[in-house]
Length: 431
Image (cartoon, rainbow, N blue to C red; front, side):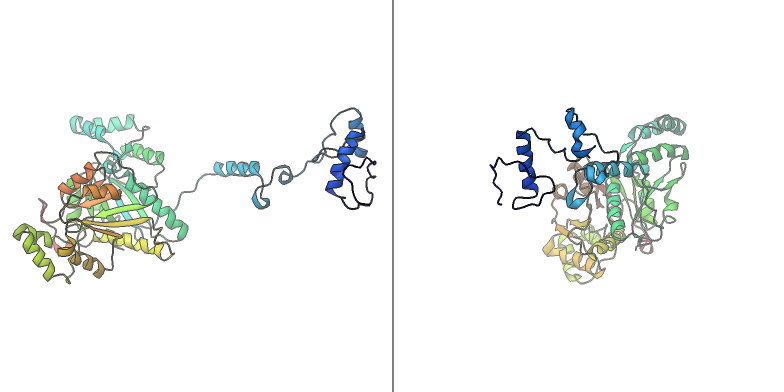
């Protein structure tokens, strides 16, 4: 007989054959009708019966007791998406996963890596300590460091650059778990070994992955740069940087910006000047000796002749090699490395030779900005590079004023020191 929602007939006995309306709708009707006639209410969902229909508990107005056999966690917790365990299970798993010690990645072999050597004063701010060293001597300096070794240094000019290198490494390890073509950061300092404890504490405080140290106890670390297969050396000591350049190693004196400028945490951005940085200083020699008009004529006549390489050509080459690893995975637009050519050259009069030189080397930059003598600072403020390399302090200071981290490359005719011999220009271990 068809089911009628308003029927006052008594509920069919449990187990009776169902007709239309049987199943969940019939059960709901039984509940409402049973309540109306004082019948036993059905037991709550999720609880087991303690006797026939839970009669004893119902007779005394008590809840039916729980089953002695607990249901599974999966059944008790609200299910997640697609039947996955519910939130409490996920939270518990995440809690225990976090208790497990984090395994640090393995350091690459120096001959396979792109080695960036950074001085302690480039990586951290040590103005107060340097003042003590200058005014009171090495013993007072070491004592101060020991007394404060549990206080981490503040981040220095090279700190954002190093963090960006490590962010690139993290993505490379995901794409190429077995590859050692990574950035390898070496702390290169003439500090006393006892100061190393504070440096280690600071590195661990900021969760930096720097496993290789070179602490020379007052001696110049330049003699160790080649042994570490250094591709780039950054220091706040101009004299040491000049020594590295003369040894044929890419190097620059890094300066802190005059104001704060937020930089990307996901993409490494490196900006290069052209002449006397990526290229040799031959064109600058023409300008110094004969003026701009002769320079333009010279560049036009030699447009198809590649310029000789400058001190940082090898570093751009190393960056390009890592970029291609992302390109081969279809990630050109999402590549975490971006390079810029920011040059005082004018595009129409002398830009072609610069671009053709890069092409002849099999290199490129993601962006090329020809400023025709205009200030570089405003453009660098828009680029927000982690580091900008230039051979002239005028442009370095302009970048600083705009908040960009800039590094001076002491190479070429514009510098006071003697230009390195041609056979020393090759950056060692350019890979």
